[in-house]
Image 1 (spheres, rainbow, N blue to C red):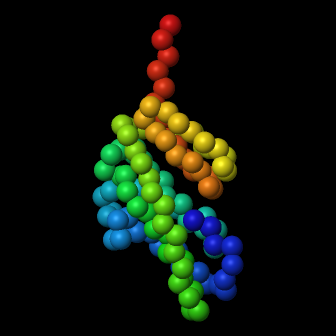
Image 2 (cartoon, helix red, strand yellow; image 1 turned 135 degrees about the horizontal axis):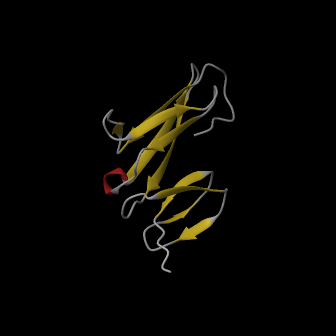
Length: 110
């Protein structure tokens, strides 16, 4: 979640399914400078799928953006996808609008 406009200080918070993300949910909230925040999943699984909302607030206003995370299976390896790249795999399907961390399960047969 990156806030491109607005007067400081800006407070960024996250919700999952319209509620605060539980402390024991396996998700860390990482601050990215004064205008950004990211969710870091220790090991994404089916319980993490749903709506995530970034709320940015200052003394003048509050704005929010909600996105859906779909997870099928468990994470084995983590890769970073660049902006606007499409991924369609057996376990995961998402179109990125910003940088997004995607879990892939890859098996090699020799």
